[in-house]
Image 1: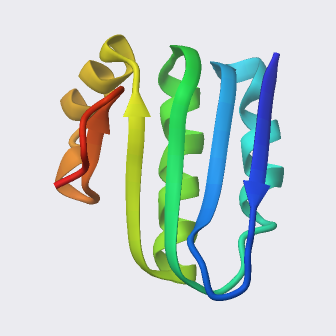
Image 2: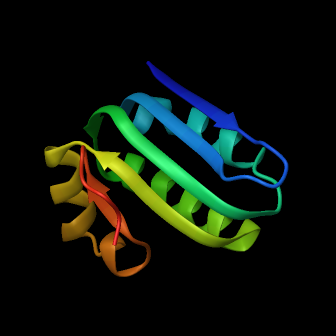
Length: 107
């Protein structure tokens, strides 16, 4: 099961927290959630709770990044579990937005 929370505060960073398996059968949950993103200065995507990621999940994540980059001047991805970070880097997402593993600051 995938849970996505979009926490928007006027004048502050919008946080998109993703928990669960980002896989084919759950990708629609992420697609629905990123349509709730509104214009803001900064969006942080928190992946601390992602336990699994497959190819359709990567595609849904790409859609989230595309939407976030349209809606904010600055986008970063934080608290990425090691196995998920490996997949995201292999797919080249770290060249699109700053990314940091759990406990590391974003660059």
